[in-house]
Amino acid sequence: MVKQARARATRDAIIRGAAEVFERNGYGIASISDIASAAAVTKGALYFHFQSKDDLAHAVIARQHELAFSAGALVLEQGRPALESMVLLCAGLGRQLVTDPVVQAGIRLTTEVSNFERPVADPYEDWLNTFEELARRAIEEGDIAPTVDPAMLAHFIIPAYTGIQLVSATLADRTDLLQRIRELWIVLLPGIVPADRLDALRRLPELIPTSA
Amino acid sequence: MVKQARARATRDAIIRGAAEVFERNGYGIASISDIASAAAVTKGALYFHFQSKDDLAHAVIARQHELAFSAGALVLEQGRPALESMVLLCAGLGRQLVTDPVVQAGIRLTTEVSNFERPVADPYEDWLNTFEELARRAIEEGDIAPTVDPAMLAHFIIPAYTGIQLVSATLADRTDLLQRIRELWIVLLPGIVPADRLDALRRLPELIPTSA
Image 1 (cartoon, chains in turn brown, blue):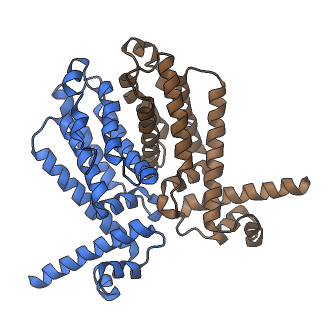
Image 2: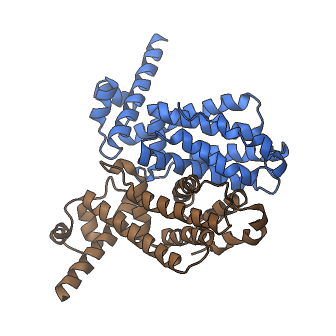
Image 3: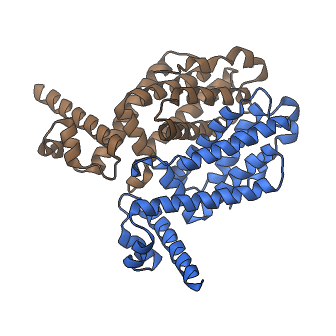
């Protein structure tokens, strides 16, 4: 048991070290030696857990998606209205992107598709499905107009969000990310909310704090 | 003169070769030899024009931005209403993204920021400024509601577009890109157009062809 816990702790440290090195140096020139050194483990210990840099990148992506998706599950468990949940999911991932190096590196690796033989599609699919389901529920709850196509809306929000965090990382080192996510909802809401619900829902974007 | 034209043709061939190799193999593992071979020039000729892979990547980005921005200028010269111009600019870049390997590689290199010492920010700034100016004009023309903040709208559309093309490239090899760009405008319009103009403008997204 102690041995298992230690192995798990080593594995976690390596994932954090890999995230740090990928984020600092970029995947292309990151080396296994740099990662072992950032994780304070020997290269031997690293190779016991991971076979290659590719393997490490996929582990960082998997951990990031696990962190984001489990934080998302907590939001969904609160039983809030679906549209409010959509806003809070965006806020939660935004906060993780501003504060958590594993999330930062995981998202960057996911968006830099050239690094991999096959593009990483699963995280997008998970979020697309979650948002389509929430949009469908929000229509039933009367917070999204029945004229809105829930699949189209999900296929708009998730890619738009992907681009907003990418451009914020590029132009502003993510310092404006939470503000930009809030603005996504400020711009989007009037077009998707039924006219008679707009006054009640107009302040939803304020659920997104503009600092982490 | 002939010599200059030949040098220019060689330079163009190298940029096209670099774009092809970056897009096929990813920037990280693309090699100068691969690029020389794809461009059908010697490595000596390549090094006469470009000092390094980094230099080549920036040349591909610059050429892509030149292609996109000059196509954009043609749209703007037609003197159409500003909101219609915004839709047509999105359509034009979308068509280039589906058909032109230099544009495909340039956009991918721009979004894969880890490849460079400093992120490539200029193309974003150019498009943000263009769209902010157009949004301001569309408000004057009565096609966008005066309650919409033109800077906020530009800072939403350009990153959203960036993400839409990225996710389309990742999940669908860009086969759904033009459809997704049309959907961006279908989702966005009802929230930014004045209620009394919506019927007149609702069909604007149909200006975006869904096949190149």
